[in-house]
Image (cartoon, rainbow, N blue to C red; front, side, top):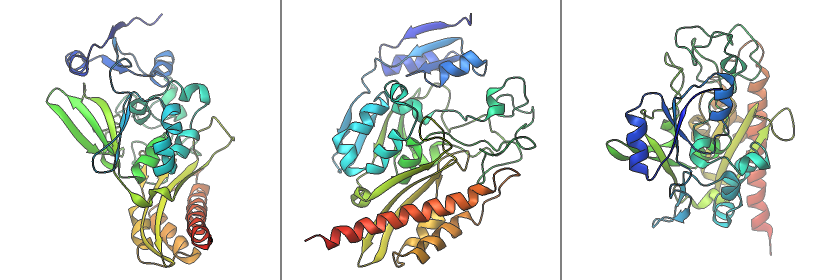
Length: 335
């Protein structure tokens, strides 16, 4: 038995106050990640504060045309929402690419963002891991690195972030709304997750006791032409080796704007800003798409077992952009 206390939160403020004043406390949402880590001995909270009954389960249109997604909205409900499917298909596709139907029925928006890496060394408490025990060392660097990072890693950690949903939200310029002891703040999703640096134990910029209440996705007209593609070892219930979330704004065969994010390649959802810069103002063709991918991946630093990810990321990104451009042409060709 693993002893811990349990409380059901009455409201957001009291949940934040309870966790803030107790260093060993944690919020409990769907529990699909936290409970597994408790079983493995990776996490050992002494108090779980259940936030699943808090009123954060709505999907609402914002005055400016964007959407607010409550932190306790289930992944399955978010993927099926008509507003999300029509305005942000990349987000719906990313959610449906993750986990299994049963897990999506439990997993929440906030919890999905807080998933921890599936690095086998992080989950094996018999091996050294800087993320689990700072200063212990990184077993992965000289170990099995097939699933590990090629971008943004450090000598202290080469793990990757596992979320599909977060990759799509990074591409959509989403912002995470959090409630803390000092009130509410909004954090751009691209800044919410951290690269490992010399503190790999910190996955996000959240302070202890801060609670995710919502995610705001801004209005982005050309997001209707967006897609998510995930390359993995199995057709379902597998984490990404590489994934791509992208949206394109094309006019007259020229890319006016674009959004690109990569998954499975870094410690956080990787916003591909170099690729976006190469796309803007360039012809919507394979040469442009290849140049954009090459610009982003020029900074890749593969490990012994994962050099294939560079070519995989390049080819997947080019394929997704090509498909989006073809959709644009197909729409123009309709009578």
